[in-house]
Image (cartoon, rainbow, N blue to C red; front, side):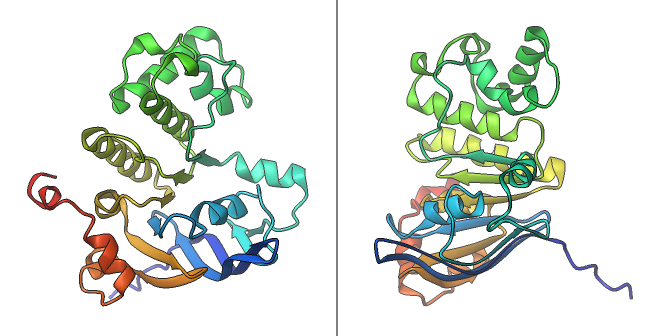
Length: 258
């Protein structure tokens, strides 16, 4: 019998803690993201999920601990090397964070346009090929973010994250504020993006239907630390009170129709 190859560790978070003015937000966080894995991070509002994401990508510096991306220690890494590593990541923030002065198509191809020369026709073709999977119409490409709805802005931000097929995808509340149909569409796109490129993804969410659709593994942040981890299937057998509270938010129609 052939020995099963161990999957490569893509992101490794070890003993990470973060406080603001003596207010402890994260304490001794430990987890790994493996190659080809889709990880969902859940927790109540204010539990530190987004703070954790910002620590991973270097927008915040942990008070202690280690964060490695592809074996590169990110904490205290010099700016130039950190930026080079982050070029391989596709990231969405909770409120989109699109560039107001750029048109939709320019927002979508922003990262790859900074790495290679792309003319307008090529840029629009690349952007169009992505937004079609997101249920967006071609006529939005020449609009500015302020000219499209909040839900569309969120989908454009996701298009920007997956443009260029980055191997690591990080999503902060990708389905928040979206209707169930659009939310399901986003989830399918995340799964498609991960499987197509053999990449890995971390999704911060409170949408438990989404968790069931996209996640291979789930971790729960509660009382500043990880209080539970397991598969979506294991969630339903868990006796953890917070896990059960989250499960109860799943509409029963999800099991019948999704």
